Image (cartoon, rainbow, N blue to C red; front, top):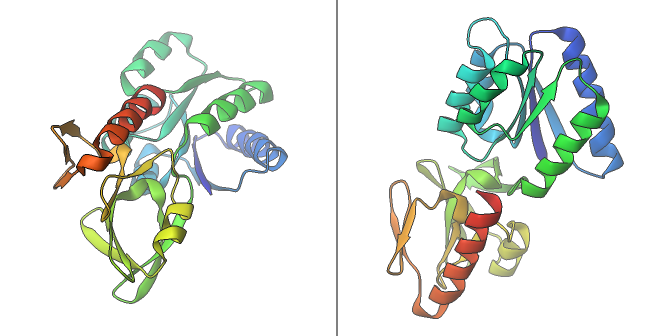
Amino acid sequence: MLQIAICDDILEQTVMLQKYIRQFCEKNGAEFKLHLYTTGAELLYDVEKFDIVFLDIEMPGLDGIQTGRKIREKNSSCRIIMETVMIERMKEAFFIEAFRFIVKPIEQSEVEEALAACMKKVLGSGSVELYYNRIVHEVHQSEIQYVVTYDSYSEYRVKNKMLRSEASLRELERQLDERLFFRIHRKYIVNMAQVQSYRNGIIRMKDTELPVSRRKKREFEQAYMKFDLKYR
């Protein structure tokens, strides 16, 4: 399910965007959930779960550029679509790697073009049900760092916790986005977006290192290069 946020302090703009986004997703059969915010500070509390953010440049408090910088720190894979009436501020948005720009007053065709482009790029927009301390949690696939598989269960590294699933290996590989996840070893599946560096058969992530098996080394290197070129 796509997690989409709108952050705009002008009610009329938010209502219009909601309408266009709903129409596009329903027409294209995309499952989605909309989240609405009026300030950048509010948005940043939840930003790690979003695939797409429509972000107004001109807002009180944290403006769109400042908010965008913080989004990049917390959720590097999020697609940011900037809204603005000030064309001259578009240059600033390049520094936060804005994916698209929409000029106000907003036109439906621009919103649909931006969403269509995002849909081709958004990875891991689905979610999986995992357990932590016997409590079920719905986890966005993009949040998963890697998976460790065992005979009858799997453990998922999410932030600084290990969550558990009883799903079979076959079911696990069916659930996970194959564009994003790669089996590097009979025991490990990694999220390629979370890989910080790779060298000599060793993957380095935020707080761990994982080995790529000799049998998978060439295949992984090709998949990682393709991922880097197509989705980064």
